[in-house]
Amino acid sequence: MSNSGLQPTIDLEVYRYRPEQQAEPTYDTFTVPLRDEWVILDALNYIKDELDGSLSYRWSCRMGVCGSCGMMANGEPVLTCAAFLKSYAPGSIRVEPLANFPVARDLIISMDDFMEKMNRIQPWIITDEEKPLEEGEYLQTPDQVDEYKQFSMCINCLLCYSACPIYGMEPSFIGPAAIALAQRYNLDSRDHGQETRMDILSTDDGIWQCTFVGECSEVCPENVDPAGAIQRYKVTSTNDWWKSKLLPWTSKQ
Amino acid sequence: MVKRSNEPFWWALFGAGGVVAALCLPALLFMTGVAFPLEWLAAPDYESLYGLFENPLVRLAILAIVSLSAFHWAHRFRFTLYDGLHIKHLNAPVALFCYGSAIAFTGFAALSLYTF
Image (cartoon, rainbow over all chains, first blue to last red; front, side):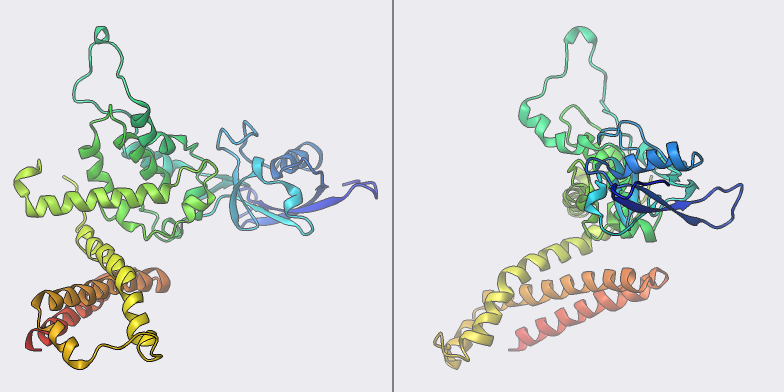
């Protein structure tokens, strides 16, 4: 940790958990150069290269596209590639794995729960029958694309699950990103899977766990607005419920 | 087949209550609580208000406003108790208390307006 007197530095308190060595997590403090252009991910890379090669964390693109470097910085879920060190100075930065998930090692969480939920909402275009190739492509107007485009911007970074107090209390909640992704397909004019997905979404563990705290949309780096997707789906689900009670002969089941 | 939630029933009442409360209550509170006592506006006299309430549609509208507002409260308070106090295991009694209060309040309001 040699620093010339001129180079300003900042301390990172980094969550450490190596299951083969320790039963309980600890924190290691590292002093890193405080450079204007450095983000937390740069600091972690500096630690791994120069100070402690055993530090484990996920990252790939370092430009807000891959969604793998999400962590807690001073208790807030952030993409560490987009969180500049200087915005935390003076003072130290506490870097922890994303909240509400089991920790596999150091800053790496286990994503299994989310992967299962994402699959459960069937995030692909469901058609009644596949159109033969010779009939050409499925056309959409710009308005039809705009319907779902916002919800298609999700990079699966899981910041929304970390920010969601409901998911923290009720791990069975299907969660913000999975519901926004379901809406990405529900609102696609080529998709006919709304009825199938409603069995997953219109349940107590689906949208009805949500109390519209709205933190998911606050932390989303891609402005997907999962809270908006959920609210919108609550209207869809409510219309369907009243229709099935008042006009039972119109619903399929 | 997965069991779909019956939450939409309560959520619809909650949503409707939120809308009518946000639209009507500030205006009612402002008039009856501020503007009339401070004589910014001329308060309607007893006879004209009484005449207004003789119209069953007015009584129905008042019932809708107070009843839906009560269901709005019930739904919100239910989740405040669940999430604030972490008492998910008391799901049934909490729901019974909250929605039961709103239903009782609606009954009381309906009776008052009917026998008025």
